[in-house]
Image (cartoon, rainbow, N blue to C red; front, top):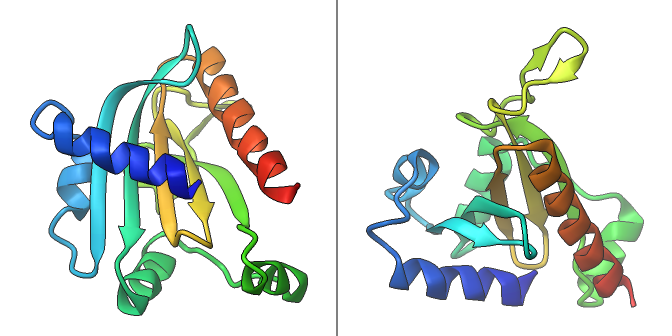
Length: 154
């Protein structure tokens, strides 16, 4: 996840003007965090999504992020893994326009257009917000996040 965050920050510096999203604009002025945003990021050969990364620069930034995105404390075994240098990565479906909130539901299904996936890297102290247009693209997001988790656990 750390390499992924660095890649996104580099890409964001390159595509800064084109990659201004609502989320980027919302969080860019927040002290103690860095924000990067990339539009049309290729997850695989067919899935392209918009990604916004919010990363803490210091403890104050991480504490703000935990409050802002309702990031909970880790279980003792997860804290031990983190102390040993292993990342703990969690993800959840959230509201696209406000990732603080749960994903909007219509009937019995998640509203795809109104939702996003938010990934949290405790080691990098970063939040990744993936916004896609189709369920297939969201499946690619989940596949990528699961691969990252599996790679981290080796």
